[in-house]
Length: 265
Length: 230
Ligand SMILES: Nc1ncnc2c1ncn2[C@@H]1O[C@H](COP(=O)(O)OP(=O)(O)OP(=O)(O)O)[C@@H](O)[C@H]1O
Ligand SMILES: [Mg+2]
Image 1 (cartoon, rainbow over the protein chains, first blue to last red):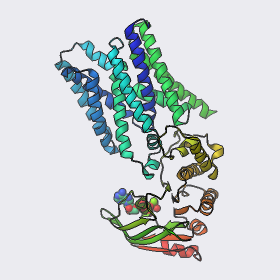
Image 2 (cartoon, each protein chain N blue to C red; image 1 turned 180 degrees about the vertical axis):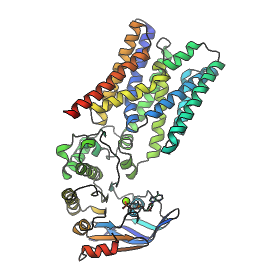
Image 3 (cartoon, each protein chain N blue to C red; image 1 turned 30 degrees about the horizontal axis):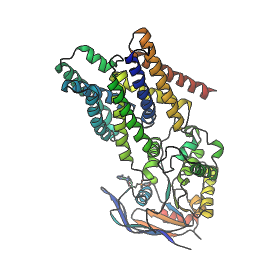
Image 4 (cartoon, rainbow over the protein chains, first blue to last red; image 1 turned 180 degrees about the horizontal axis):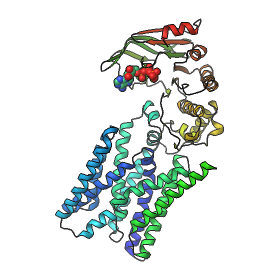
């Protein structure tokens, strides 16, 4: 399997993606932002289509769209009551835009499916390098901001009264989420991106109870899903995103079951 | 001995259509145990938020000595919506308040966390997820988090409201001990006049448009009731 260049590329890129999604996911769950990862993936789809329409890479289009909109959406979500409806409206608009850009760019429908559902075959060395660089940036910023981000995510009230710059932290964090969405969409596709950003972290918090252990376990769940998913996709010739989704769901429901058992006993 | 820590002069705070204070004056000295009493909605939490710099005064001044920047404040807020699913252990929760840029805690910082946990009596249950802790244990964990950076001023906003009697006294004994042994200045907001009378050495009684500040010595609970309207 590793004699094929694209499989090596897929494994390398997948490893980076699993690491950043596992890490960011812990904070996404703690900050109750699962809904935002859905919206961002739809916006990412439109961005990718826009990128192709403009003759850039799908990744650049995605980055531009998701980073700009994450900041705007983040500001809006401060007002809880307005959140639900306006977010659905935004999602609808961006899915529509994505479809529009794709049809304008005269691409075959296989392009659309690879953006939506991800693809292993298309990953070139240049893609791997882009994924690695972006992941590196996300991880470095996370490390630099680790303590304030942890405080604000796990005790927003305490962080605010202790004088942390909580607004600045949220904005930076949303940009990191947007970057992770764009990077991860390269393999799992924009439709299923929220899986890697939410399920591993949501499962991890049932097993371990410190932030560092949650990050470790969440990365592990994400890695197993991506590695095993790529392998199964390779041997069965079925889409990798299906396997990743299935594996992460198994982890998540196993975690729920574990929680039931340990509370019941 | 009585060095001032905070002087509040002619403080006025108003929300749209709601003048909370017009002319509030009092001084908190270092080592004081000041209780702020008054009925619901009179502005106790607003006063604290102004002291913390989270609400801008409409007029008047709040002066810290030597400066606000140099004064470390530990705060136990009135409301914290941590549900049963809250995942962090008590130890990790207490450590959240340690400042710094390293992703992990140093040995010295671990010692700080340990000290705060033993002072507040939660060390035995430090591995327990905070969501599973009882109301009293939660309040002690909050207190531990507030004191982990060794503040000079500790502010408790109705931290005893959800506790039964025994737990209330247990928590305030801990606070009193910090006040006496480490000379931490305490600002304690409460509705509970017997509690205020037992532990505080000064009181600030707030009533709409009025205030009374004084030393607790010689005050009976009836007198407190009269000045605070509670
Ligand atoms: N951000 C705000 N905007 C507008 N009005 C506010 C704001 N915060 C507080 N108020 C009003 O100011 C008044 C004082 O509120 P505050 O929370 O300080 O009362 P409190 O004395 O702490 O009451 P409680 O005992 O119920 O905690 C109330 O009438 C409240 O509605
Ligand atoms: Mg209050």
